[in-house]
Length: 285
Image (cartoon, rainbow, N blue to C red; front, side, top):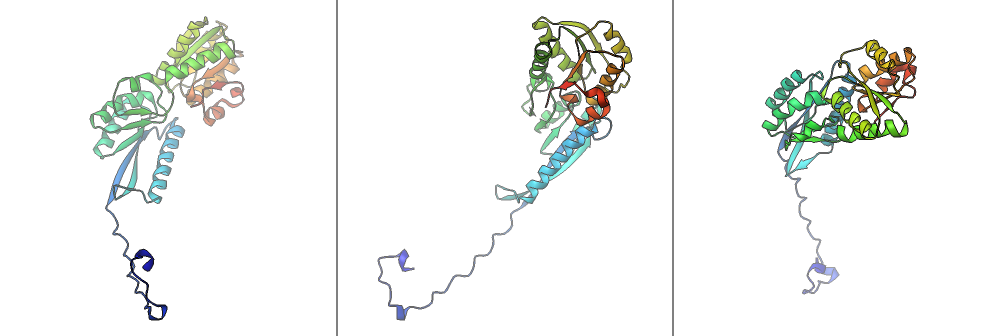
């Protein structure tokens, strides 16, 4: 104690008295707990559910880790709760899901997975001033709307499509290209960007075909494409169609290379395509 006040002479050791220690300070009272609801919107059922469940599981894991850490913000204990909704990769269902999450008073949403679902839903979140962060939506239109609440964490179709087109004509030297898309905002938008790049570097689009995101039989499209003797077939769409398509391509004896976007970059694509997946390429997320 003397060391803290050198203006006084310390008493002799014999006369020193034990210093009474102050009672231990009581722990501060626990702060108020605030529940923060985070929405997740993605296809949790159906052929694309392997993607959707992956997003949901990742958000739940992040919330569990944050809750276990005892997160405190502004003196308040924060607890996260995850509310997951199945949009079925469907635009109409996605808007219903978005309104349900807004009504549940979420503070933010991770989703949607598909551009076609997330774009119409984004207006609902924007009107409610709720931030929307997508882990996978690539359509240029999503953020081009200019909403201050829309965010993404990966490249858009303009960036991805340019790289894919350059890879097709450069690395693979393709001169004649067939484009097939699933008519979704993602698939069609990506194929459009690939087409721009292929044409810009002097390649030829010998056919532009389309299917849908529920189809499984592509023999008619591929048979028609085979007659045009393409060097490469590009597919804008997801793995539930991409896998069977490349398998049918090989069954028809076509030698054309097969290229797709991040929608077929998955173990599911390999499972669905089997040995026919060998040699196929996709852009990574």
